Each structure stands twice: as C-alpha cells, then as structure tokens.
Length: 614
Ligand code: M6R
Image (cartoon, rainbow, N blue to C red):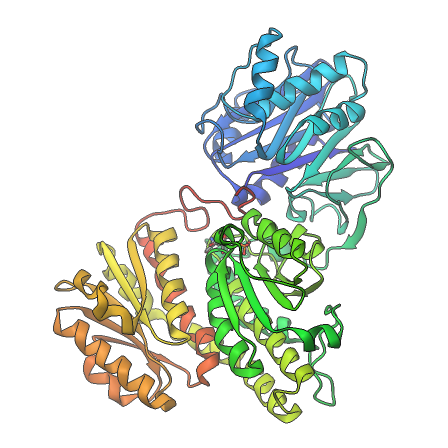
C-alpha cells in the first residue's frame, strides 16, 4: 500500500529514487511522483497512473542536478487517483515536500484547523495536511527532524512519512507508526524505503525501525529518535537475498517466475529444520516447551491467500497435535470478542509482515495475553517484530501482487509448527515426524513435475478466455485449494469465480451451474475411500447439469476418467500434501487467463501487494 523511497548520497537522486520506485511499484500504482532538492529549491513531478506515466513526464523536462530526493507510488485511500492527489505534497510555501503511506485518521480535524488559519489545501488527501503542518513547524524555527517529531505527535492513525526541504538540503527525514519503513545503510549514501527491494542494488545492510520512531539520514549518518526527540536505536540486519531475486530474470512477469520458483522456495523453507537425530529444530521458536505444552487452543489469523494457507493448516494441526484450531480472517477477529487467554496460541500468517488487519488482530491477541507466533516472508517487518516467536518462510521476495510461492511455503511453515508442537507434546513419535518431514521433502520434486506438465492447462485458459463464471470445488484440504483457485482467477482475470466445499453444492451453489459452466474439481487422493467417492458424486451432479468439468486428480485415478472433460493429473502424494501440488495448475490457469485477456499480471487493477490500511 504505497511505496516510498528517500535517498541522500553522491549519486543522481532522481535515478536512485525512480529505480527504487520501480521495485516498489507492486505496492501501489495509482500514481507516482518525486521531489528532489536542487540548488534552486524543490523540483517535483507527479502523475496519475503507473510509474511509466511519470517516466514520460520526466522525459519532457530538464531535471536539475540533485543528490537528495524522495519518491512515492500510490495506492489511493483519500482522494481519487489524479495528478492533483499524487504525492509528494508540498507545504504552504513550497519549502517542504512530503510523501506518505497509511491513513491519518484525524486529518479532517487538522485540516479544519489549518483552513481556519488561512491555509489553502489543494488536494483531497490526508497527506497534504501533514505537509502543511511540517512546514509550519519549520517556519516556527524547528529543524526538519524536530519538525517531523512535532508533526508525528499531532497525528493519529497509521503513517510512514518521508520529507525533504531545500532548507536542509543534505538530509531526508522519515517517521513511522504502524506502517513499514526500513533504512538502507550505504557507503557515503543512505536510503529509506517501505521495503528493502528499493535499495538492494546499492546495499545489503539495513536497519529495522521500531514503532513511533523518526530517522534522519545524511550521506554519512543515520540518527534515530522517538517522537519526543529522545535517542532511539534501530535493529541492524543483513539482507541475504540476491538482487536477481527481485528481477524478472527473463520472464515476462514476476508471477511466472515466482510460480516456477516454488520447488526451490519449499526446499529452502525446509532446509536445516530437522537435526541428524530426527529432532525438529525451529531455532526461531522463542516460546518455551512448557508454554507450548500449556496451549489448549490455536487460532490462525490471516487475510486473502494467507488465510487459505491457514485453512489448509488447520487439518494438519488438529490431526497431528489434537489441539483445537480455528482459522479467522484478521479483519473479523477482534470485532467478535474472541475467547483467548494465556493458553491460546495465535498464529499470524503474513507474507509481507505488514498487513494492517493482521497486525491489529495480533495486537488484540497479545493484549489478551495470548502467545503469538508469526509466519512471515519478510525479515524486519512489523508482524514478526511484534510476535513472541517467528518462523520465516524462505520464499525470497514475492513481487507479483498475486501470491503464489508465499502460499505454498506458508503451508509448509504451518506444518513444521504443527510437527514441532506434536514433538513437544508427545502426540507423535519421532519416527512419525521424520516420516512426515520426508514427505514434505519430496514435494519440491512433485511440484517440479506438475510445472512440467501444464501446457494443456495453459491451452485451456486460452480457450476459455470468454468464460464469465468459473467454479472450483474441493473437500477437506481440497476446499481451501478451491478457494485459492477462485481468488487467483478473480484478482488476475477479473472473472466471477467461486470456490465451494463440494458437499455444500447441493445446498445452494449448484443453481449457478449452466450448460458449459467450467467447474474445476480437486479430487482427494484415491486412497481416501469415502471422501473420494463423495467427490465423484459431486462431479456427476454438476455434469448432469451441463458443467464442463476440469478434474485435478492423482495420476492413475481411473475412476474419475468418465466424468472429466479435462483431466489434470497430479503426482500421487499423501492427502495433507495434496494442496502443495494441486494449487499449482490453478495458479497457472489464472495467470494464463489474465495474459489472454491482456491484463497486467503483476499489477492487477485496484489491488496492491501489501495492504497496510485496515
Ligand atoms: O502479506 P500478506 O500475506 O499478509 O497478504 C495477505 C493478502 O493481502 C494477500 O495474500 C492477497 O490476498 C494476495 N493478493 C492474494 O493473491
């Protein structure tokens, strides 16, 4: 939700900032803009639409030399995505430029106060209010850092702010509350950004900032304070992924690359988690064994695809640990007054580690003294930082808005946690755990096999470009897979798609089926007796009403053949592992469908990768 970059150093700031924005554009693409400090004051340019529009605008003007600058890509909250509402916003005299990510909740009251004092605001945004306040503090004698501290004390809500001023030409000042901000530590140059991807090509050393902190960067120094100006410290960390991981590497879209990276992502997430003696080792687990033995309930909180990963995980957690497990949308969780106490474990799943709905749910859980364990793909992000324990997925950067490799690795991470709990609580023997880990270790090869066999699925997508409704059916762990297949299709192809538990079909949804309606069916592995039989009945039911069935089933599952208009054969894996292979054809189908329709696969309309507003 909005990407922010700030730079001060020896390079041309425009280039550094624009390159950074290009890597952050997945966070929002409603508009883009830059502000540079030059010898003649501030130079700003901003345009509605994608970064390419700003590129075109910049190509038409002569940009003055500058080594200090900020930039922004927007996901609109307050005000339409227009040039006028694009960031940066300026103060009243144009002496301060500011970019913002988040929502300033008391902006209306602040705006009224400013207007009563004679300020004329040009945009509909909450951000411009902060720009005017910042400049007013500077005009009253504060330096830019003090001014930022003063403004932050007046703001409510979630914000990352980054500002420059020609009155302090060699510094960039930034602040954060509830929204992401990291510092990149270079040699003779420093950076601030929403995400390390913005500066990875310049430095791998970074500083994680805490809640309610202000950071001032110059070429050679980084100073962190709280909102009152008291000295504070960031937490240094090293970025261990390579720049190539954040590039398309010859693929047309990041999503295509990320789908192909799934075998490696799963293997990396499993790496080193089992000792030579067969003991599961989760080094990042900071909860004691006594804490884990006391847990009497698990609640998984997550949004979107991560929620679907949680739904899959519930089956494994309950089966292996015998601990009751609920899965709840983060955005609903705290509003229902959930029953939680110190013996509840809340597992927060978030690829970005910044999703505001999940963060707020997590804070509510901690407030009730629950133990919180985060599963995240982003080191240095807020959700892991605020949790009692963390298990990082090692998927590498996921840049396409549609989540793929994060989903599979989130399932793997949940399984590792379930096995760890089973080990500590003695609900599984060591050899049983080792056997399941062995099954997980075979998944990368199985996913590779699936990936190599998907040309017919792509062909199907090309042929179905005109479909207006697509249904997905599953049972047991196949049900969340159906939900995920439908979500992918909605967000990428903008088609009405729904996932259903196959048994529910006859209770209503079957009325949607018409002659030719495409219905994807995830069939449980053939060893699953009654579950398998019931699914075959469901396929017959939709087929009898004219559906075109695309059946995902085990290789050699001959019983489904008479009912499959198209068969997608999956490698035979144990039931709980099936989501890790069955999701992949659905990702590829949605991706191909979006390409057929000419959509931007990596940046679907109206969406942003990291949703940092509630
Ligand atoms: O970063 P998170 O895992 O917390 O994000 C959660 C959802 O916003 C995310 O999974 C979203 O649903 C994806 N765009 C789906 O592909």
